[in-house]
Image (tube, rainbow, N blue to C red):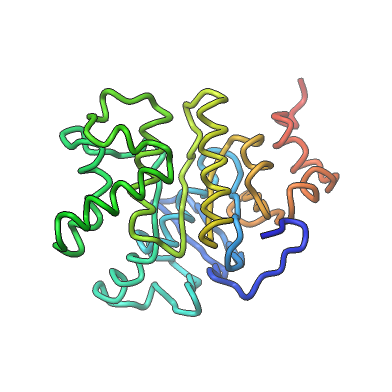
Length: 256
């Protein structure tokens, strides 16, 4: 799908004036954002600025104090637990640390979502695990334990686990955090492949601006609990706003 043309069918996820406070702190103060079907939306902003809280609202792990989260037109905050579970089956989540089970092999980790949902024939389960590991070029590591893998390999196993159910929506929380440039590049490539080969809609939280510019169709900059800017990577670079430019250049904007 061309990043230049932006030929989208419709909004897949709609955040409508989300507000959320935790204790006495206002985290989200009216976040509104449309995420189009098949695009990769990258969320950037200062630490504690609400990016991960926004992801938790999209999965239904948090409910907004005000506003709505619509997935394919359905307000998930109003769903029962059973209805929300059905929606979550269409969502894959890559946690920041991978969140693999240390006591399970690579293959067992990847198979876990399928075992949770259905028993199925063991041979079919193995086929699906191998297929998922092939997507991340790790099919030869199916019997290894997580402790024997590098950080980048653990992230790729976690991505295979998230993708094995063929989700329509993928959420990534700092997917390249703590990785060297080669491993980070491999994760970026996989995110792009998921979009190109499977039409997956993705939301990526990251502080890695090089990664953001490489994978994003659009970038949303969260500032003071709101979407301060949303546009293509080129538009972000060229916007000329001092708040945006100070952030992407790593400058505080305070007198030295």
